[in-house]
Image (cartoon, rainbow, N blue to C red; front, side, top):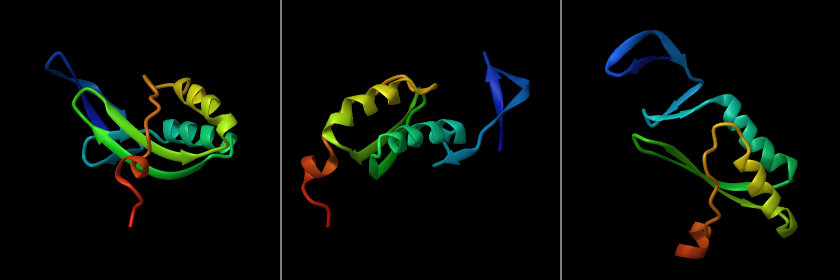
Length: 102
């Protein structure tokens, strides 16, 4: 899908080609998503939950995953090295915050 590019209020002649547009505002390139899931696969991590959040400034992808405890820090470090990732934050899972899902 081609999206228009605007710079300083002027629309440029070129467009930005994205692989996916989710929720009309979250842009996820297949290469970036492949790189993120590749990190999990390389460490034999199991992705159990994914959620997308978007604002005008940034998009967040929230992953819950299970992995051998010895691999956890390596997974987080590798995710931080994926091109396009500006930050990786370790947070408690929703199940630890809200309890078991029904």
